[in-house]
Amino acid sequence: MNQGLAVRREQGRLLLAPSARTIRWASFVVIAAIGALVVWSGAHKGGNPATVALPVATTLLCVWLCFLFEDLAAETTSSSATPLLFRRAVRAAIAVPPIAAVWFAYTWIGPLTGPTATMVGSFGAEITLALAATAVAVRLVGSGGSGLAAGIGVVFILLVVPVAFGRPPSVDPSLPPLGNPFTYWSTVALASAAVLALAHLDRFQRS
Image (cartoon, rainbow, N blue to C red; front, side, top):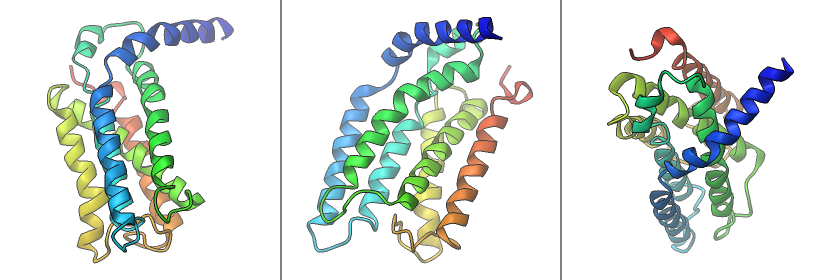
């Protein structure tokens, strides 16, 4: 078992640099800046940035994450001894911390005073949702258009669904689209984690 862990650790080390190079960092910087502007605008026009502004900025970050698994090079490494799930886990481990740092900074813009526990939980659920959406999209449409397909799905769930139920997109703990905050975001997180796991089972993978 120790030998297996050592092999995985070495594989992870070797994957770090090539994985980081293939992540779309330029678009991340642009989206992070746009998100900051959205939150700042929401905070300086007499409104509460926790409603609409911060959810929109968070959704932009999640849409960027939807392109994380859209890696054309993955097609040539599908027969690699390193499992697909492990390779994607390395990519996620590289991409998620910068997103989390930017999002945390957003929560301090304007009258916001940092994230609450519920806000952090909802953000984690949204990240899991984005990863699940892109994993499913890659299986359904391939690497070429998976990011766009996953992004549309994430926007629909995070922005359109709340509006459809008569509530504006909000990170206010008292305003989840349905039910109470704990139940709603726990359901989103658990369902997304289950879909993410299913998307990596061999029988669901594209041949």
